[in-house]
Length: 252
Image (cartoon, rainbow, N blue to C red; front, side):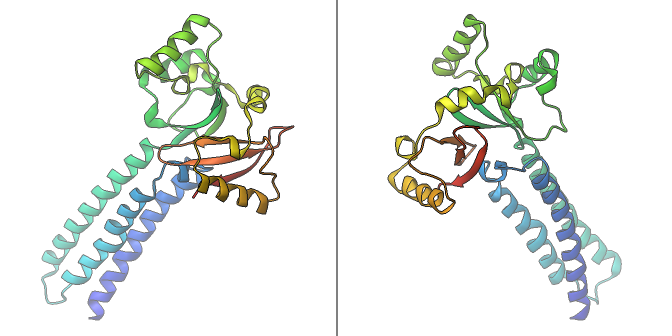
């Protein structure tokens, strides 16, 4: 039994270290800020944890028979490790493709833009026309303003394509992005109260108003906007004068 437990412990330690390094790097780097919550990656992380930390070492515990020839034991454990690596690579690529690149303010809302939302031609155009805010593989999440272009024809085409054609929105076109600070004047005009947010249910309004009050924020003030993610949304509370973010509150 000691042999089995030793094999199990070593396998568990190795699997946990590998998973911690990968998830820790993604969480502290590309998923920092509200991206981890907004993208709903917990399900992917759970699958990775079950396969790489729970299932793999458990199988090793079952097959680690000291009477088994070492070559056969090494082969069996190697097959388990290969399956673990495949699951880890798949999960990591999924998380990498969904990593947040931008938190945008556009029109009257805040939205998260993930790497998978941006098409290669748009990325190429951004690197040519707007290199300061263009995305790269190493880019960390940035808060940006995403206004419609100054050209009225281009702006109309984007709006019509989004509404009627299912085309790309301006938040998927980083060539038009501008620094966050340049959009604060427009952002202040869009701030609203929680009660005016039609997208929230009564229960959600009650929840966030209670959390605002607990944080010393006025729920009756025009100081908030919804932030939309892939599967979830947040309430972002601003200082109405400086437009500085004061809180990000979950709705559940």
